[in-house]
Structures are given as C-alpha cells and as structure tokens.
Image 1 (tube, protein in one colour):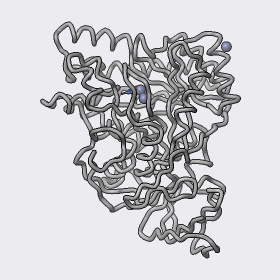
Image 2 (cartoon, rainbow, N blue to C red; image 1 turned 60 degrees about the horizontal axis):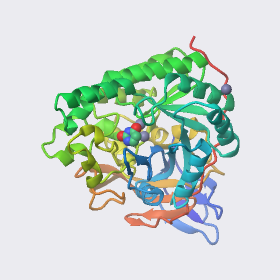
Image 3 (cartoon, rainbow, N blue to C red; image 1 turned 180 degrees about the horizontal axis):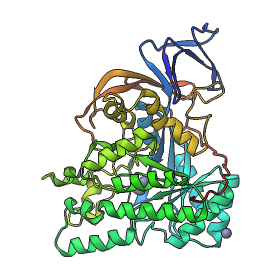
Image 4 (cartoon, rainbow, N blue to C red; image 1 turned 180 degrees about the vertical axis):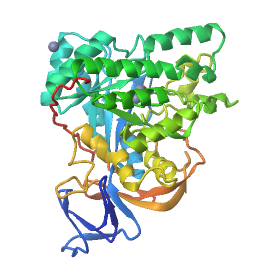
Length: 466
Ligand code: DUC
Ligand code: ZN
Ligand code: ZN
Ligand code: ZN
C-alpha cells in the first residue's frame, strides 16, 4: 500500500498537484491534494516528479517465432525491461502456428506469457479465411478476452493475408465488436522488388529499404482504409512510417472514417542512412519492416502526433541478436526483421518530443498510454489515474538524463539501436499493480506477476465514409 506524495499528476487531460493512494488490491484508492498517510502505507516521495499512468506498449513480439528463428526477449525479460522504462502493460501478437487453429495458438501464447512481469493482452493475427477462423474469432472475442485482430499485408508466403480474407475478417470483427489492426505494406510488390534486387547482386542491408519503398506502404495503407470503409468498420494501422500513410489516414479521418495510426519512436529518430554503415552488423541491426525512411518522413509523423491524426506510440519490440541477424549475411531478405526498444520508448519520445517542445506532457501521456487504452478498450482500468483504476504508475523525472546502452539495458539482446543517445526524461520509479518494481536503477520485476488482460468488446455502429 503506497502513498505517492507531493508529485505533479499528469493525465491525458490535465496537470495538477495531487497525492495518490494505492490500496492492497493494487488499485488507486484516492487522489487529492495533501492526503493523510493511512496506517500501514509506505510513503513514496514524488516531489519534483511527474506522476503519470504507466506506459502501454500496444505492439510487441516477445519470443516470436519469425523468419526461421525466435525473438530473444521472452515475456519475462521483455516486460521487465519495459518496467525499467516506465511501461507497465503490453499488447503482444498471437501468430498462428502452421496447421494450428487460432484458439490453439492463443493458448500457446497464454502459456508462454505466464512468466510476464507486467500485465499483457493479445491481438490475434488472421492469415487466411475459412469456417474454423470464422468460428474461432467468435470464441476469442466472447470467451478469451481478445478484442483486436492483426493482418499482415506483407510477408508473402508466410503471414500475408489476401484482400478477400482481410475483408471477411474485418466484417466478422465488426459483427463481434472487435477492432482490426494492419501491417500495411504491399507484400507482392516487396517480394517482387526483393527478387529483382538480389538478381542485380544487391545482397546487403542497404537493399532492404529499396525493396520496401514508401509508396509500397502508402498504397497498402490506402487499400486497408478503403477496404475498411467498404464495410464501415474501424481500422488501426500499426507502425506508420511514411508521409504517404500519414496523409491517407488524415484524409480518411477528414472524410468521417474511424482510422487510427501508431508510430514507433525509432521511425521518428532514425532515417535510411542507418543502412549505409560500412559495418554489416551495424546496418543489419536496423533491418525491420517498415524500414527507416528518408528524413523528411519524420516531419509528417511528428505532425501527425502533434495534431492528433496519429494516436499511439509502440515499439514493435522484436529482438534478434548478432548471430540471428547473420543468417542474412549473403542475402538481406534473410535478415530477421525486427528492432528492440521497449525499454526506451518513453524516454526517446519525451526527449525528442516533449523536451523539444513538440508535445505537451499531457499529449505524451495520451500517446504513450491513454489512447491505446481507449482504442483497445482497456480504459479506464488502464491508461488513467482515477479511483478504481489499476495502480500502474510511473514517477517521471522530466529533467533526469541517462545514456542508453546495451551495457546497462535490461532487454535480452546484445545491442541497443539507440546506443550512446543521451536522453532527458527518465522513469525514476515504476509501480505495477500497486508495487514498486523499478526504483531508480533497481529492477524488482517479479516473474509471473503480470496478469492476462481480458479486454471486453466494443460494438461500434457501422460508419461509412460520407
Ligand atoms: N516487422 C518487423 O520488423 N518485425 C516483426 C514483424 C514486423 O512486421
Ligand atoms: Zn461470416
Ligand atoms: Zn509489422
Ligand atoms: Zn510487429
């Protein structure tokens, strides 16, 4: 039981001086100025600190089997690293195993995630369509607490979903009160360009962005929006990395369509120059999809976040170590796609967003926590500082600094894409379900303490573009 005393509470709506009491059940029991410390409560001094809802990362891939290997951060190490950076919940993706049903795959993810140190929920990926999928979607929504599904328009011959199956899935999700999310890149175009580049002898990481140019994301984003619009269902676009995709989302919203966009901090701070490093491994570390873009795209992403046309920040946290990346030494298409970053999302966004004056602290809370909780129907249990909400809280030092390094991070991966970046804005203490789990450098994550988040449905009226 905690009395968080003397801090400045920041929510997505406002900033005020208030204390917070966290009760035995791990819930917020009281918020107000100058509260008395009840008997048995431990005082946590928050003077000079901002008291914010714990971060929610809506896009992670813990121990994901992908491209012939398995992502190295598991649900324990990955969520623990998140806690060290102020993130107290994640939404991970159930990837259906070959020949396994959605329900079986969901159960397998439940088993893997049992060791998580922070709360977690799942989106479930739909890769094809048949009667079993139709049935399992209903079971997942009504009995398993899943209210979002994922669609990969890329990764041909692996996870890629055809448009027809995507339409079926979106209609079904709409009927059930779930929301669809999409990785928007034209997978046929990517496969075609990859082949072309390899035939030209372009085998290094510098060919990766050439195989997935911005227009390939722009086209797929527009197509996903168009298909969702035909059915009148909402759509959430993961890792928006281009001006084209940002504009497509903003335009659709202007037309009255319910479209959400997610941004990764790495796309805000790295550009395609990362692929020109003479050291192969240094470039290969940045091989993720969508790739890092020519720098001018960053301006559009920032504009989207500042104006409210883009809504959440995530990491797509997906760790592959040196020897895993080396599977693609002679062929860039075999470099496992993924970049780590769950530990650094909030600091990087504060440093480059709030400390530079682009975002207000309230917008920061909306973009790191509250908007995700709302879109995926976890609010106000998550994403809020309110009586009765889970006591997932970060005590943020807006002027504290740290230098990011693999030598000190908690992610289970042998490099850090932000290596050497000194950031202002750090998590001093992280509280998960009422327990201090990160205390100024001391990580007290508990294996298995995280709980599965059952997310209720949210039935929207079909809305067709005007
Ligand atoms: N992109 C990645 O870089 N890794 C995991 C999956 C994805 O879409
Ligand atoms: Zn149907
Ligand atoms: Zn993706
Ligand atoms: Zn992803």
